[in-house]
Image 1 (cartoon, rainbow over the protein chains, first blue to last red):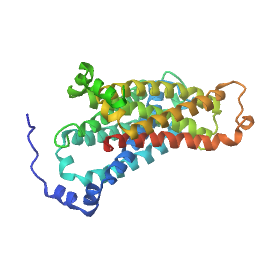
Image 2: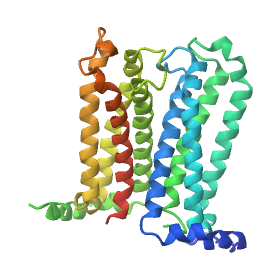
Image 3: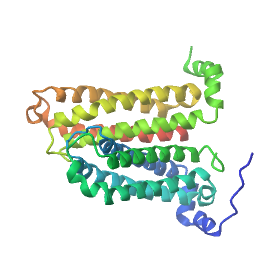
Image 4: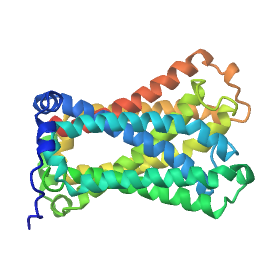
Length: 171
Length: 162
């Protein structure tokens, strides 16, 4: 059964027709290379976030202090996320009209937004009082919830990303 | 039996067919494969960058390796298991593909390097300055990271070299 198609969008068509988008789309190798960078960056984001999230949940890492662990890992997470964003944008441009119609793609972007909001909430609340629970286990409930939800959201993002290529219209 | 004949035989088995024809199995198992890669990459980033002197230099190398090495082994095991299912479902895609075999060679290299150069660090008397191959510690740490990066690139390119 065909899902209800999204009506064509002029902006998406313009992006699709852009020089960058067209170059990537028509090259035999550019898309695979950019996509490889994208996958690598995603694994770096998820891998480094998982280390922090597990510590928030209460699984010990290589240092006692949660704050210093976050300080250790976050720069890598940010750089990886930025590169994932850039590579993802390039991939998007190569088929803006197609991805625009993809439900998994739309949900993936939404879930990334939710994950970002989740992290922001953590940084504005439990993280402010990190001095109280920095080097002690078990962690407070707010930290556990933040860690668990963050990890879950990022795992969902991986699944949604994979599903883009296996669903309409990219399949 | 040649590789091509074996791939052909596998392709015809009920298990291979079931994996291939059940819509959610391959993307689902690929997602698990990617998550396990994240496990390897995360563990590799922390351990290799510690040994390269870039990250967490206030923590002893032994403490860092002791904490993250088990995650690397578990992730590699999950990669093997999920990879096996994927290969079983699409035997031509893997067995007849030089990019896949290049990836396996790199994985084996990464695995052996990890085995040889991470276990000695766990010894209580290990001191990085007095390590037998002290001069090699940093370059090998960067090489280790490079190998895992190359594995990821090969992994994606399998799909494009058909």
